[in-house]
Length: 90
Image (cartoon, rainbow, N blue to C red):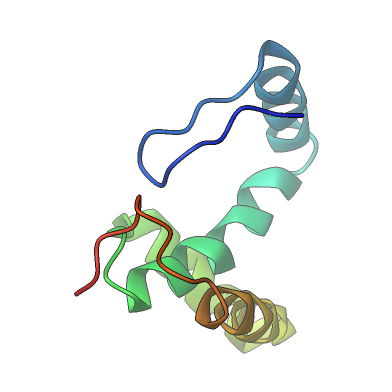
């Protein structure tokens, strides 16, 4: 079983880092998948998006609609997270 991680204190394995970089090299696919997740987290006040992430989120929403629809799914999952002692309540 994997070791429990907490928001802001998690780590990636060497292989996870490798595959993320490889995914970013391949047309930025991994980066573009991350943007809607960061948008959802930012709406909960857990992270702050960079200017580039804000720009690409808008582009995803305008041209694909995918950015928004991906964010909706992620926010639904986040709304079901119970505070388990690692996530501060706001």
